[in-house]
Length: 442
Ligand SMILES: Cc1ncc(COP(=O)(O)O)c(C=O)c1O
Image 1: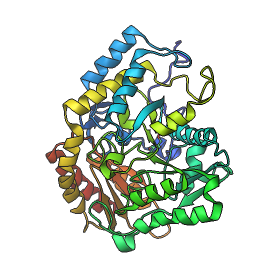
Image 2: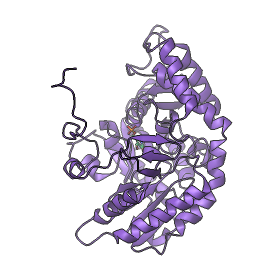
Image 3: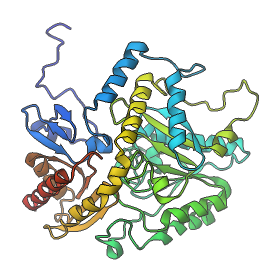
Image 4: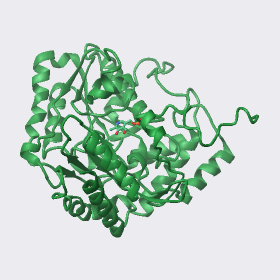
């Protein structure tokens, strides 16, 4: 690289930042330069406690030696191998390990590189499965208002966050949405699962009555809606959704990109709720965010339903150059060891009541209108300033960062999801800083 093409370290202009107000950010940037455990450090060396596990993904904490070593060893042995009509041992080994820890007969794993790819892969698998079993008229996909399923065209079509959809044309045809489950008038400040709203799952019956079951391939929901501000499901809601899907031959997809790998204090939300979806999407905690990875876990009947036709026929015309990338497989396998050896899912379950008490202690902070929690995550709604939706949330997010805490902001909702290795005194620190940030942003 010649001096003229070397990027200037202080030039922020060239990077087109994702999901960011680029011009605002570049005037007053927030940079992270180093990470270890539950902390980040800014380039100036200021310590920031990671209240969001990066972006809900660094579940085992930052800078884990075991993962580093596994990736380095894999890089030494084999950097890359294709998985189209070829294979490498780590991919099969990882799939077998995932299958062994998944509930029910979710015992096949398709790999990709992100949550968005996982969602689009799951939707395609659902459509292909329906066709393979002679139900090719089932092409409709049902999502949910306020859902977030990544940014692919499939994901934004079934997703239900208006800003992620409205700029991008007509999206996939034949998609419908269930109502969201946020009922603050009845459920505000619920601890854990809200009491009211299971009947919202019955809206699926209304959608079936409108379109007919013979046109519907799959329903996709996040067991706990994450990006929209953390909405744990009403008690009994997921069970009812499962029953209605089963009754009508509709596949149920759980998008566990956030809930998977321990966030709720169980390996998966499916296990936590005792509700087994037909397909499950994962990413984030699958590799502790060290090497990008996503996956679709598939139940036996779906996988076997696709294993039709002559044996030399490719069963699913879908995949990515980097499906089951060796470095991602090495990282994902190492993080499974950490989850197990450190008992991190159990740890999250044990810390959850302490976390719940902590976040609900913010109830009387200025402008707080709702607090929700489940596992080691929480969503806190602030009252919007008149005519300036999002201003208060942004101010609180920036204040928190200035005071040494990273949180996640979506309009006037703030979400927190610390690494599962967080200590009780660090939870205290998170709550303390967060309370100050809300006050100062009021
Ligand atoms: C539930 C859910 N699905 C899908 C995605 C998309 O994942 P990615 O950003 O890795 O594409 C996310 C990301 O936050 C998510 O929370």
